[in-house]
Amino acid sequence: PAPVVAVVGRPNVGKSTLVNRILGRRQAVVEDVAGVTRDRVAYDAQWAGRRFTVVDTGGWEPDARDRAAAIAAQAELAAASADVVLLVVDARVGALDEDEAAVRMLRRTAKPVILVANKVDNARQEMEIAGLWSLGLGEPHPVSALHGRGSGDLLDTLLAAL
Ligand code: GDP
Ligand code: MG
Image (spheres, rainbow, N blue to C red):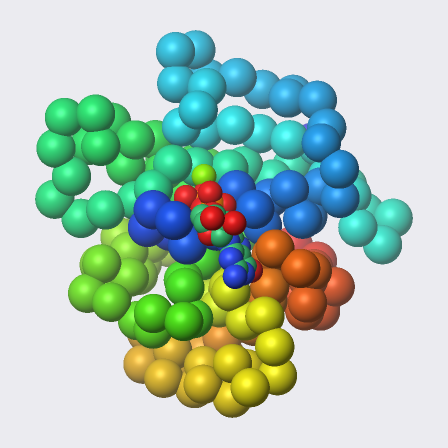
């Protein structure tokens, strides 16, 4: 089976935009988890001739309740089931407590995690991501999911980890 990449992070950091960027264009849903389609959706992806499955998840938040708790649980399940996790943070906001909590959650899964600094739309913003090293995941990988900036380098890094 193709290796699986889970895309995880708090709400609105650009996870779904990044998934669409990775796919290049909209592709067929290959796996629906019954009843929770919007919370954990897997797509067939390909880069540099290698196939993998990319799983979009809903926003992960610590101490989520009700519907948000179910969404967060699905995101945790996606991470625990993946070969590699892309933790997406909003580089324009910087590392929040919620992002640090996500790092702790991901540590418990023991999966390799690549830190994605999204919304780096230009070179000036790229110089401001150094603070994300504080998350303890090593090098932050700058990308603009919206415009595509840095996405090729990110995918090269991802394939090297698969
Ligand atoms: P999700 O909740 O993490 O899946 O986030 P979405 O993919 O739905 O994106 C949330 C918002 O951030 C949307 O308005 C996107 O257009 C915006 N966004 C996503 N990626 C980028 C980016 O690279 N740059 C900028 N400027 N905005 C982005
Ligand atoms: Mg989304």
